[in-house]
Image 1 (tube, rainbow, N blue to C red):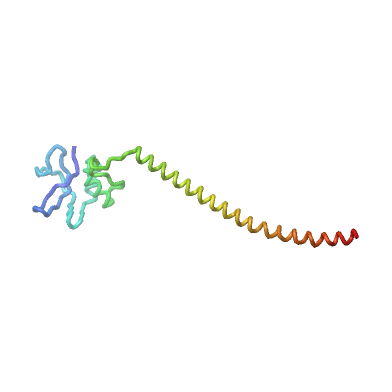
Image 2: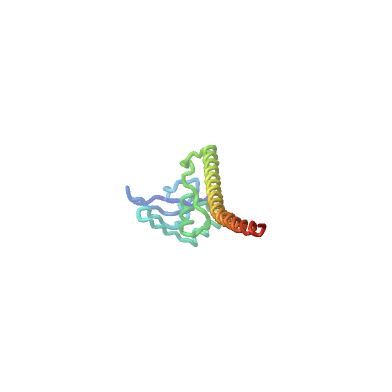
Length: 155
């Protein structure tokens, strides 16, 4: 089975890589490469890949390594999402802890929303209370003015 991999070339402390198609069972250093697709210079961050050749080999079933696949995605030769090159180094996720944090966050948001709603209700009640006493104060003042008029009629 063929594979697209990086082959290290360059001097000590000055790495550069070639992107090659090689048989999966042989070492990249054995110089038994099937095809040279491009190069990668990590110090300069330069990636050069022949897109037509890469698509040709991918169409023929060549499997790219995770790093080469991420480079192909970066160069937009392949559509897709980048893969994690170091899956064994991923952090240990405590699902119970995440669930508890999510529940605590949801409870805090609910409490905040309830407090906000209560504050709005209290403010609305204060506004209604402030508006309601003003008409009530006017009605008792009018009532005594009418009462003497009624007494005069009765007399």
